[in-house]
Image (cartoon, rainbow, N blue to C red; front, side, top):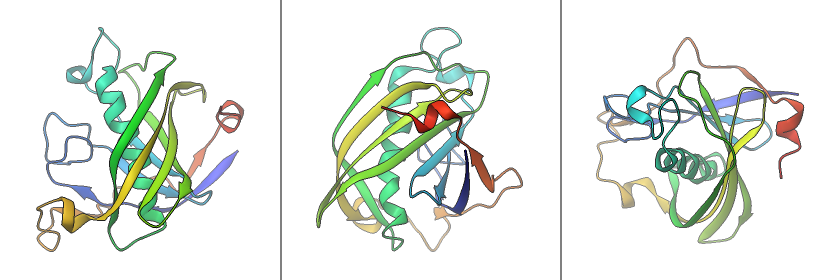
Length: 176
């Protein structure tokens, strides 16, 4: 199943997950999809391993939590962010370091101050490697981060490899 990418979300300068200038970070890119979900793409580096050749579980938690937390930005484009209140995950399969990783997040419940979401880290064939869910407080980005948005610390960076469409294999559409 093909799903169109409808927008790209901003990156920070030094965030571990999305910071483009953080030499040790994941340098993840985040995209909004036509089905209402948010997708992250990143290429793990050798420095991101736990067991040899495998993404560290704590880093998997970080990218999955941030992807779910960013899902709210598609509904509230005026820099509303999800601040994690509670997060759990289940590790099913190892995530290899030698290929790009795709992460999907979505909102499952939305109220005035909080939202709940779920998400998955998918392997190339669409198999769910790690699933997670969380509860988040809605807050404006300027209330939780001391960064110079106008000065370029939080901006959308267009890149030649930004996808216009993503492919969800059959297994991914049957997630549990």
